[in-house]
Image 1 (cartoon, rainbow, N blue to C red):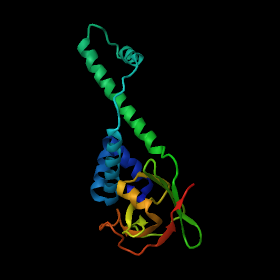
Image 2 (image 1 turned 180 degrees about the vertical axis):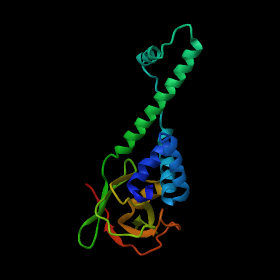
Image 3 (image 1 turned 30 degrees about the vertical axis):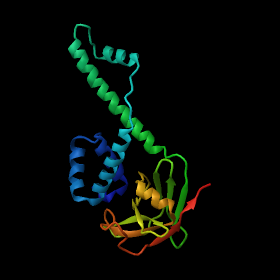
Image 4 (image 1 turned 45 degrees about the horizontal axis):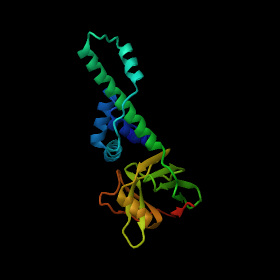
Length: 227
C-alpha cells in the first residue's frame, strides 16, 4: 500500500518526515515515495516552509531548577563526573527543546483562531463536497471534505481564489478525505481579501503546473464573510 492509495495519510506523514519524527524503514520508504510523487513533494515543501516559519518565532526558555535535578537523578550523575554531567545536560536540553518545539508547532497548527470567511462547495444535487474556512488573523485555511464526485486517479482538485479584477490565485490542492489545515501565503491572503468567490478545477496530480487553472472550473461558490 502507498500513500497514493490513501491520500488522507500523506499530510501527517509529510509533517512527521519534516519534523524528523518519521524514522527507520518508514522514513526510507517515504523518501522513496517522495521521489516519484509530485503530491508528496508538494506537501513536504508546504511543511518545510510552514514549520520553519514557526520555528523562527521561538524564544529560548530556561527550564525550572527541578527539571535539571530530576534529569540528574534519573541519569545517576555524581559531582565527580562534571564532563559526563555536562554532556548529559546537553543531551537532555536537546530532547526538551525538540519536545517543546513539537508541542508548540502542534498547538499553533490546531488553533486557527477566529473564523472570518466560509464557503460551502456543493454538487448540483445540493450535497456538500467541501467546506472552506478562512481564518485571517492566523492566516490559515481549513477544508472539510464531504462527498466527493468521482475523479481520475491521475488528477487532483485544486482550489482558487477569484479576486475582483485579477487572475485566479491557487489556494492549493484540495484534500479528498477528512480535514486539511494549511497556512496561507501573503499573496493568497491578499487574493482572498479581494475575492467574493472561490472555484475548483481538476488539475494534474500536485496541482496546475502553470500557476493558473488549466481547465474550466467545475465548482464556483460564494465566499461569505462571517460576522
